Image (cartoon, rainbow, N blue to C red; front, side, top):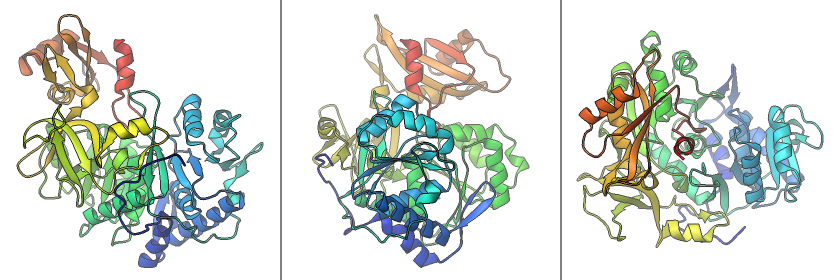
Length: 513
C-alpha cells in the first residue's frame, strides 16, 4: 500500500469481515435478500461469503490485496464484499457500465490482484486486464471460459476464518466519477466504513424500515453503504434488490413486498412522479431518502402529496466520507436543507481566505469526522489539498442556518461568475423546473468575452410537451431576472445521466466546448 496518512480512526479495531457474523448472531436465519423471484437467507449469505473467502485465500490473495468487483446489481455483490473483507482483501468496486479504457484505468491504478465479473462482461474485463502484470486471477459468475475461474468453483473451498485486520487498514478503494478528469481512488479504512455503517444504523433506530428496495448501484459508495447499514441496525432488515431502477417495476415491488424504505437520487424521483403512483398501494412506504443533489421544493411538495405515508429525507455525503455527513431528522425536516450534521460529525463553512464564516454566509463546506477518508490512492498532493488539519474541504458551496442545518448551493467547480456576480446553477435549475413544461434542467457556464461567463441551460420537457428555446428564455428572464437568468436555453430529448442517475455535467460541457 502507498503512504496514506491515517486520520480520525473510530472504533477500536473494527473489522468489516465480522459484520455478517454479528448480523446473523443478532437476528438468526431469516429471508434477507430477494432478487428476481428468489429469496436468499441470512445464513446462506454468510456461509457463501465464508467459502468464497476460503477460495480467495487458496488463490493466494493476501491481506491488503485489491479485488476489483465489476457487475450489475445481483446477490453475489454484497456476498463478495464480505468475503473479500473476511479474507483481509480490499474491495474495489467498478461500475459495470465503464468503458474498457476506464475499467483498465481502475484495475491498473489499484494494482488489483484479482477481478471478479459476470460471464456476459467477461470478454470486456479480460481485454481491460490484458497484460497488466498485477492481475493474477479473473473470476466469473456464471459460465467461465479461457483462463477465467468460475465463482461457483471458488465457493467449493473450506470456509475461512477471519483474517486479522486493524481499524486503520484499507478496506475499500472507491473510484470517483472522474468529472474533473481521470477517476481517482478514495481510500477508506475498516474504521471509516464501520463508523459510517453504525451512524446509518443509529439514524434508522426506532423506525420501521425493515424492508428496503435497493435500486442504486451497489458498486457506488451510496449502494455500498446501504449494505453496511443494513448489518448495523437493531432490527432484521431485508433487501429487495433490483438489477436496474425502472419506475413502474419499482412501484410494483413496493406494493408486492410492502416496502418500507427506498434510497434514491433525484432523477429516480422524477421518473416515479411521471407514473400513476395512485394506482399502486404504497401505504407501507415510510421513508424515501434522497441524496446526490438537492430536491426542488415543488418536487418535495408533490412527493408528500402523492406518497403521504413516506417521510422525504434529504441527506448529504461524499465518497470521501463514506457518504455520511448530514441528514434531515424525520419529523423535523427543513425544505431545501440536507439536515444537521450526524453524531460525531463537525461541519463548518469557510470563506476564500480560509477563515470560518458566520451562520447564513455561503462558502466552502468543510467537515471533520471519523468517516473522513485515509486519502486519495497514489495521490499525496491531492490528499494534502483536500484534507488539511483533519478537515476535509469538500468543494461544495453552502451555508449553515441558526439551527445548524446545512443548505447546499452548488459544487464549487460548478459556480458561474457572470460579470463579477456569483450564479449558483442549482438555484437556476430549481427556478426552471417551476415552468409547467420543464421536467428536468441543468445549468452550466460557458466562457464569454464581455461577462467572463454566460449562463446556459439544458432542459428536458415533460412527455408530450413542446416549447421553443426563445419562449423559455423569456420566461426565465421574467421569473428569475437580473444577471442570473440563462441567455441560452437548449431543449433536449433527454438529459445525459451518470451511472448513478445524476445529471452528467461533463457530457453537457463537451457540447459547450
